Amino acid sequence: MKKLRKAISAGVPVKAVRDVTNRLRFGPDAPQSDELIWIRPRDVTHWYAADPTKGAPRFRRRHSGSVVAGDWDKSRTPFAGHIKLDSIRAHFEQGVPWEETELFDWMLQRIEELGRIDGVTDRAGLIRRYERLDRIYEEAKRTGTLRPHGSVNQTRGEQGGILVHIARDGTPLRDGGGMHRFAVAYILDLEKIPAQLGVIHADAVKSGILKKLRQPPSF
Image (tube, rainbow, N blue to C red; front, side, top):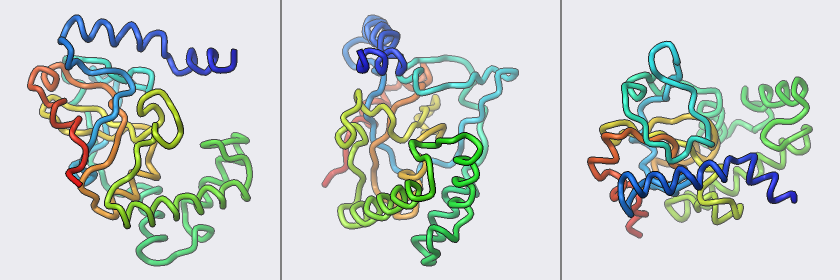
């Protein structure tokens, strides 16, 4: 029953219907929900900026694999300063302890306000979280990539991984979760990292960009 509730919460029944529909529309190579794709972190230059008034809806993980036409992919903001990216960079590049970063204080405040964030409920849990991130960083630095989120956490496909939408020209647009792991990959300038396919523009599907996005690192 617990697994069933979790599947429903993740939108699995709707995603299953979407996958069948996509195959009927685009053939056997159609995009699939929660699909694992591979991107170069430094190719991400913009965030997707949801603005329903400009034809750019709010997309969630449950929309993974949706093929959407229109101009939604033109609504974006430059990928510049970000509290997670800046604090993670300060820690790994300048040796600033996690507890002294702006991110750590922000996370503690969010825990106090909400009671729980990213599965963490107290300071001790937050410290353990960032100890795990230290290990992820060292492994990524040693191997030159990240392990797929799904293979580590036994999720459906890459559900819960680094979420990116794909614009009409194949450009990956960051949106939503996975920012800690993405920041590590961005700082290390890794060749390719695993990501969860979000929404993909109809023109990108027609161009065949998925063939490239499905190719893992060459090593």
